Image (cartoon, helix red, strand yellow):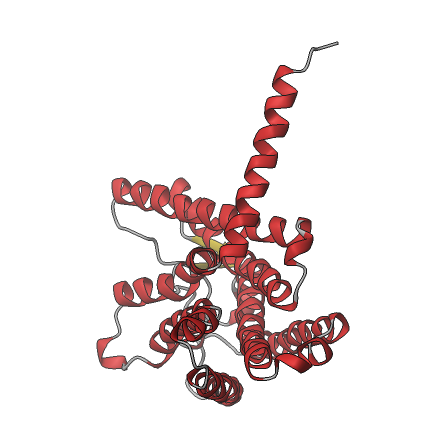
Amino acid sequence: MSNSSSFTQFLLLPFADTRELQLLHFCLFLGIYLAALLCNGLIITNVVCDHRLHTPMYFFLLNLAVLDLGSISTTLPKALANSLWDTRAISYAGCAAQVFLLVFFLGTEFSLLTIMAYDRYVAICKPLHYGTLLGSRACVHMAAAAWGCGLLYTVLHTASTFSLPLCQGNVLDQFFCEIPQILKLSCSDSYFREVGLLILSFCLTFACFVSIVLSYMQIFRAVLRIPSEQGQHKTFSTCLPHLAVVSLFLSTAIFAYLKPPSISSPSLDLVVSVLYSVVPPAVNPLIYSMRNQELKEAIRRLISWAYFKSEKLATSPHL
């Protein structure tokens, strides 16, 4: 029996057993990480720099891109370093930091997705009151509430998790520090407090889910009342990216945490964790940009401006 106070590090699950496969996974996930950095960075830059995108929808999209960058940067860099240097170790403090940041970013992201559903509801169902209900001050307050609630929830979760005595070693069957994997190392009767917090998490998640469902029920009713089919398609297309992001986020997270224990295995857990922690941050910018003409035009303007500036610098005489 070992106590958590004697741990200085945890051992993470490698992406593969052989060195060749480790390097192959390193290249694959490095490409995904760089793509996520580029795509989310483009959205952040465009929303900040283009005054045409200074609207509530794009303000919340800016926050979503920041959260996606934070969540994928919490898990992948350490996993990439371990694959490159053929190691499994992560320090105790580093593991606690991963848990804190990942819970913070994911929890805040779901709160933000709920607010974004409300934004679409007001824009479609109450367009005359949009400026009043979602003014700049109201948007800042809602975003701050999402970040603040995520921070408070994360402090409670992380403190509860790492106050548990760990009696089952220090080997985690995951490529990053994940709360369910840490709970598996706890003493048999010591994890009920954390289970209580997980139940609270489920209740909060369910409340957000119900809010999103109710918002979209009202949106669908309003869209179906639009007389022209073209108007229906144009109005509903503004909701499709958000609906796709919510579906991707919920489906992967629910399967990761609620899948039956009978089908659980280290390899399956690894694949599922990649689906909810790596894929959404990389795919979300593509989902929003593919269906959003304003955002695509803003990206083209930014790229054209950057190209023009580089050409001007290249052709200018050097003093």
